[in-house]
Image 1 (tube, rainbow, N blue to C red):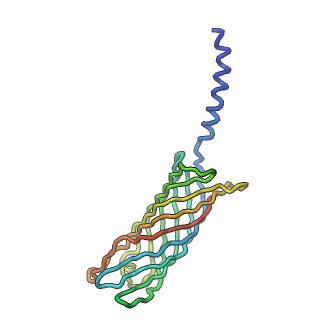
Image 2: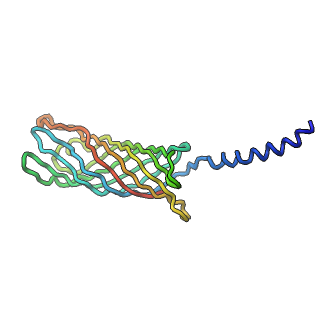
Image 3: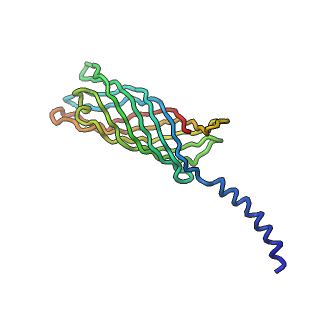
Length: 206
């Protein structure tokens, strides 16, 4: 029985590092907010035998996001984004301007960021939501379908700003985007489907 007074201090001392590690591993579940900006690459919206090929050029975008860590390596959030893209139409050897289309996106986002490079977190991102478009006049597919599904997948890098009093984190990302083009008219024999684009940008969160 005399051993217990000697063993108890040893147990308490050995438990202190474990408690310290557990506190360090606690998940910070505060919401973080911040803007983003970048470039959305061009894509083909419509092509077919009896209709012009409709493409969009690269366009700058602005956006705003909110995110929150849900478990140790997983962050969930939402992103709202807007850009205006120029349209081009081509048929046979002719090519002409199709005006512009405004596109807004509302995306839910998940990021897995277990990888580290020093103080930088490397994340694998998946986003999915709705693409809402306006403009384009009578150009197929814009006048028929203004809201379609969209998704993105890619990587991002997140780095805390040294000495920042507001815990600011800078990030850059590059993703591959897939957006449904919508339905085509029966008499055009146009082939529509998925618009493939590349999205790249920068931003920060607070």
